[in-house]
Image (cartoon, rainbow, N blue to C red; front, side, top):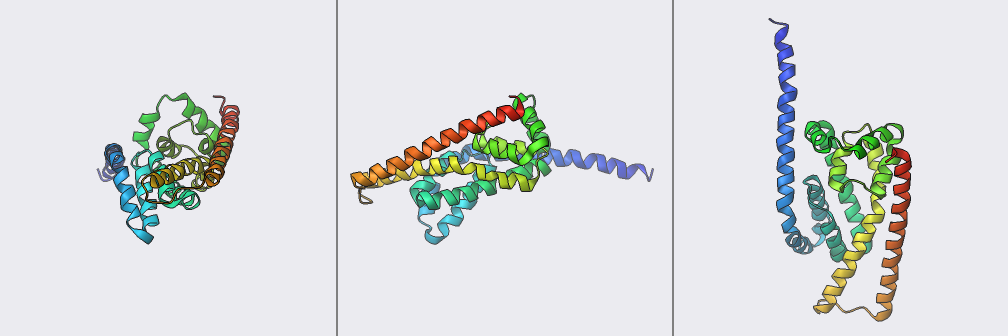
Length: 238
């Protein structure tokens, strides 16, 4: 009897842990769906914080990633709030933080729930096999040209054999897409501000230079994406 009690305890603990993780993941998804409607209000709040705004933006963005809130709207907002250079740095830091937290949740807390969500996906099976051979390279290519939605990919990669350090380093592949979205957000924000009289309008020459930069960013992003897709196809057979 004394030898059986510990075994029963060890069997019951993982079940309770997995149930708790599944409930936590479901709560995150539900929160994410509701929180998406509050992104415009969040933008106004960040703008009113002054020097504390960047830190609040990073933490809010990271939590949004963790909660399955689409990051594209926040990325666009960062361009309008902080400009191209600063906005890109802040979004990259926030996305890297949020994606790393999601990776750790999937690896240590919500493995069962994530496995059910991606079960039967041939793409993920091929990616998992390829990561076993070249983890950092595959994750980098996925960041350049994700074949999964960003938020789901973060959790899905937590189930693979990729090392945490390789996962974090490969996050640099998010930069081209981040720069493009921030650029678009900056252009939209300046246009709206100028139209509303909140900021002086750009001269035709300035708008031309800005447009050339945007077109170049778009062209480079598309080119890099095509290369990444070919490399992923060769590496995974998909």
